[in-house]
Length: 239
Image (cartoon, rainbow, N blue to C red):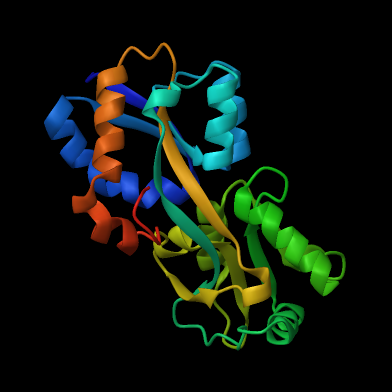
């Protein structure tokens, strides 16, 4: 079996990493063994001792883990900014959702509302706050369908789509919407609910593949990959 670089990452970076892993393997000879889920869950996995050479998490979590001695601070680099958006199954007519009133009406009329973990996932935590502000956190009841991460939620929404006239709506980070086959992006949350999350990468302290992990960070962040990052849902170049 080929040696692997172990990665713990928020689901936001799944599409970007998958598009770069072939190039990384050519450069280093290592495969990428990636786990992608809610950032809070990935933090817990790292602290629990799950094998890991590299993390891609929110900038706030990376700073926290640098301060606690789990990550090499000198290697930390910003990958980009990810916004939270809305999606529907491809082929489904999307109701207007560009204002708070429109969003509330669409959610009230939806057959199912799909989201990431409201306790551990960045987009899930935020969307639950939005639902509370709209007064819908309790009234949606069983139509509110949370999953471990946004991409899993979007995939479930696609599987559940079917009957004509049924309206399914998903809310998660735009990267996970773009990276899920069968989902159509229908825009960002209304301006007053907008969430832009900065993601950073860093090498895990004590990694046996620290040079390869640093090479992966360079690959993720180099200016030549700006168009790819944008296509995968990262709004801006790394700082």
